[in-house]
Image (tube, rainbow, N blue to C red):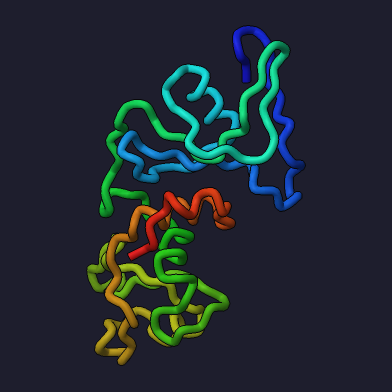
Length: 187
C-alpha cells in the first residue's frame, strides 16, 4: 500500500494476539448500514482516497515515512453504495450454515454438517435460499431424494434468505467488540 510514494506499515498487534485491532475492518455504507468486511490495507486505501472515514479505531497505528494513521476497525463510506438485497446475495455453504446457526434443521445436531435441498433437485427443487437448509450427514442420508412428507422430515425453520449480517459473520467469524454496536442482531 502506498501513501504518495512511501509504503505504509502496520504497527498493530501481531496476528493471533487476540488484540481488538485484527486484520479485518467493518465497512458501513453512507447510511451506517454494515455492508462488507475488508482488510486493513483496502480500508486504508479508501481512507487515503477520501472515499471513507474512520468511525472506530483498533489497536496500533499505520505508519509511513512522514505520517501515521490510527488503525481502522470500522469505516464508513462517504457516498452510498448500492447493495444487493436478501435474495440476490450469493448462496454458499458457510452462509447457509451461519443462517441456520450451524445446526441441522431436522434433528438439531451441530456436527458433520452438509446442506440439503428440502425439495430434492431430482424432484424439481431449486438451489435457492428458500429450498436449502443445513443438515447433518445422517439426516441427509436418511432423507435421501424424497420429499419432506415422504421422509416425514420437516425443517425446524422455513428456509429464507438470510439477514445481511450473516455475510459479515461468514467473512469474519470472530466479531471484534468494536463492531457490536454497528451490527444488528440477526432476525
